[in-house]
Amino acid sequence: MRRVAGCRQASHPAAGTGLPARSCPSLTDDSMNLTGKTAIVTGAARGLGQAYAQKMVEMGVNVVAADIADCGETVAAAYGPGKIVGTNVDVASFDSAEAMAALACERFGGIDILVNNAALYGSLTGGRIETIAETDWDACMAVNVKGLWNCAKAVIPSMRERGGGSIINISSLAAVYGLPYALHYSTSKGAVIGMTRAMARELGRDWIRVNAIAPSAVLTEGTDEFFGEKKEKGMQVIAASQSLQKNLETDDLVGTVLYLAGDASKFVTGQTIMVDGGTVYL
Image (cartoon, rainbow, N blue to C red; front, side):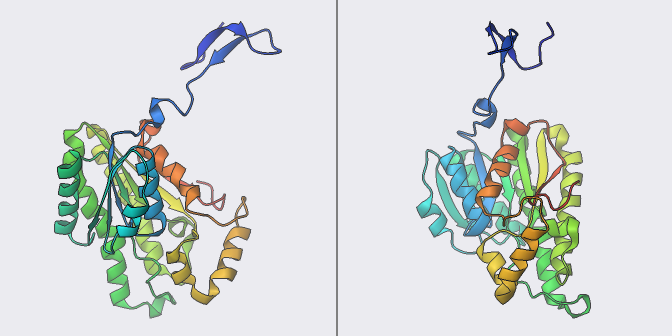
């Protein structure tokens, strides 16, 4: 009988079939074990970044929670075998990103995972293409594009020394579907996908994997700020366009981040995973 790769034939038959049962590795094996890894999560003061950082601590990861805002709430509420330290970072500044990486190396000995989550979103002023302010455009590109590049540059030396790592760039459904009245945001998140692919090509020989996650609008403070009084109607329209008709919550994204962070995805790089309830299919 032909064996299935990665599965062991058991000595007893599978119930009701008369055929040998197979025992396959589960998602609770070492491929999902992140204990002892070190991660940097940017944009960790609230919302998605806060959820990623706190779940990683719960999973035994040592975390540097970084944000331009104070991460005290994130650190105080984190619970688990992993350790966590908060720090301020301005991702638009390479010097600031480099100091963040140095802190991770000093406290935890190196860097295995970068969650490039920091972005301008809720604070942006939307509008028609011809009315978007140049200052808003420049600020959006400085944080949402250059910021991810700065953070990646800062962690790559440590990842190389450790024989590899995982960089997870947070893009958006806006990059693929197109978000009207937010050209600056959609453009920046499209650049994240291109950056992810180029980084993956270049860093693969160092066993540094680079992937992107593209969520639809998530029920966070940033979404509240972006939509304002139109939030309820906007979220209804978004949910109605999905195969899975409910609005995305922070917990719906955490599993994808953990998958890309660990060995369960050790041969996955250069990919963009849509977490959008089935809005677009790539």
